[in-house]
Length: 195
Figure 1: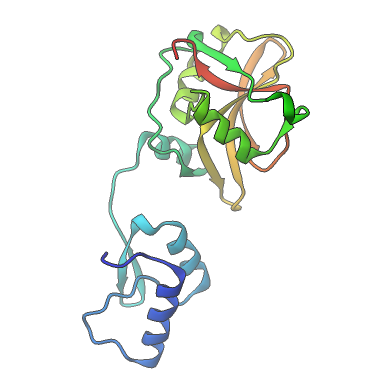
Figure 2 (figure 1 turned 30 degrees about the vertical axis):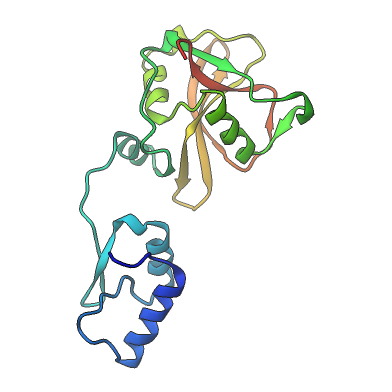
């Protein structure tokens, strides 16, 4: 694709197609159905073109994070390239994301920004490692949630989530939290002890 895929270009191409002004050399990157346009805008790397009014997508292999997210019913929005760093569940530690000025709460955007700075940007594949042996996860009492902020996910309904481990009695289980919630002091960011 030569030109950057953006809404203006899509609308221009759609108008040309409707007016019958294509030369044959031009490539239309989306059909004029609103859902297809939204999908194409959200997945510019996957769009190759349109043939006989059918959107053509690039064939590519999914990253391990994308494949795992799909198994769980999600799509990776950011962080498909976050390499796993956690050797085992015993190497997991939980680190606070709060600063003194936060008054005990932050937004999801702040949480993810701090995860990158504090070397706590563990993603979905690290969570999979932790889930393989959750009995070896030891964190301080009072921590109810360990957030793996390195991978941002989208549900089928379109909402954004991050994967978490939630405490259930003495054990941990997989759950997904809406990215837009207020993150409180009973949650921590996942980090590898050797980081």
